[in-house]
Length: 260
Image (tube, rainbow, N blue to C red; front, side):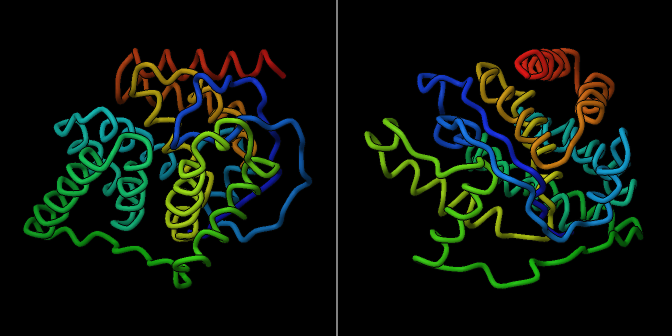
């Protein structure tokens, strides 16, 4: 899959007091930018022309949610279901690597360990899962990584992300730019819509992050996901994960749509 950055709006509705290090998107902004052309995967193309999520996009949701919640048994089922549905190993791996930015390295590493066990067990059963792809280009390092991450952050947010919070803690924005928007979002073997679906599912599985979940409903729509697709994501959470996560997603989407 390739990264995609369709039209991006802004979010000025999340107070600095609720702002968190790894969820700066949509905060402290008041401007908008025009569409940007980026290569898109087949899954992204489909989501731009349909009100429904693809089978692969749906499979990402429970994987991300169970991993964020630390529910390894649920994650095991979701990984097997996702691989059966056609997700590649690299698709699942990218979601679980990205998890560290939202739920920390311990849960990311535990989830990656479970993916490794699942892949090995399936191989012993004679199941050869598609390996997927690596990023199409080398990920920058050093100052070049920070520059790339800053560009990605600005593109997603719609303006340069700055303000009193980052004046107070400039290292926070540097880590956001270098780690999340640089090291992760520069990996173009998972498109940005899929990454935002994963983020929505991760946040829906957690408590106490409702403002950030609402912000990512906005950001998801900024990447080209529709309200209908995000409603479907809530239904997938209800059917495959649990009612609490589904309710958090539904409420966040409703609040976002009401703010438009």
